Length: 463
View (cartoon, rainbow, N blue to C red):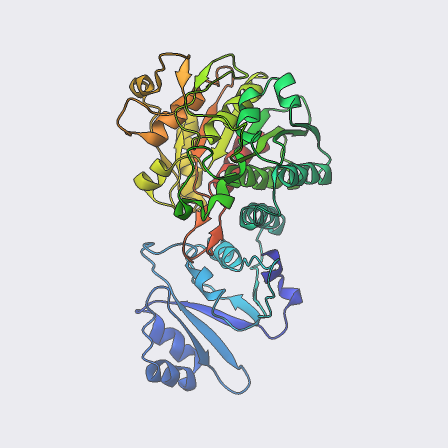
């Protein structure tokens, strides 16, 4: 994505992009000359928000692009992204008039993403000149983090198993001078991760847990935990075929925390960063865990299995317990956890859960400013009763609430594994864009991490 953004010195004969509205269109066209005015009239162009028109100017100046904006702010700040797929190859320059030029440029870049590893992409991409004064280093870091998350989610599961996901984490941290380790197979039992082992042991690809750190040990501890289920069959409670179509994205939580970690390390924020990812495949064989099983956990809680298709919260439970042991300043977990979250809020608006009121407000503010939409849902303690078990300390799914509050009860389950962290927040993301939108293309999606990067920078980077 970064390659579509260039400095003015790299451009040769750029085409100007003018922001217009139905009120300003005639004036802008008139300023460019009679040829432009006639072309606008012939094409019945009105400057409607999100619409565009390539217009001639004269023989010397060539052409320009008109792009309709909505000054009321009703349309997406990323609306300019729609041009990324429609403009012919060449260099383009934003003229004055865009309400938020920085978000317009970011939207253009995000919309330029293509996952081309398994196919040829011969189309020449348009390139956008970044206006003077932009923080290109920060923009680079954000785009690289988003691309990393999208690339990982889009990769097919035959090429991205637990081992490959753990290797990707190792490569990311090694590149930035971090270090860590990976616990594999039966060693998970010896090292105290029984739920990670139980979920992943039925696969021919051994489960593992990656644990990597970066930064000064004396800096504030920021720990990221991501669900790394590289494919979810549902286990013995097997999913129907239609529900398996997108299950390669079930490691979207891991991909997103890696994207966020990439941003943090690229800009060297003054934090001690830790990333913990359980990397498993929820498969089916004779040793698969069963409904009715009771599993031990790293936390010491015994967990009754209500449904093997709710495996993500199990592996996160062990990982969160490990993260919590050192009482980090900020503990963030991300997971493609529940269909209930999608029913409640749809694919584009992930819910988040925290009891830290100050943190909740900060997240809401940075998400809005970054055009990275999020919505807080409550950790409603009375619903904890839905997780009661007659044979264990807790059931991992809602077995007594008639299917109500699925995303909330999943978050409540995870909360049982966090006690010492100064602040904890859980994100139930979708990790996928089902349609092309400004700033998004169909496929794997980075959700919440641009806003979270801003939050971590504001909390710790400016101190």
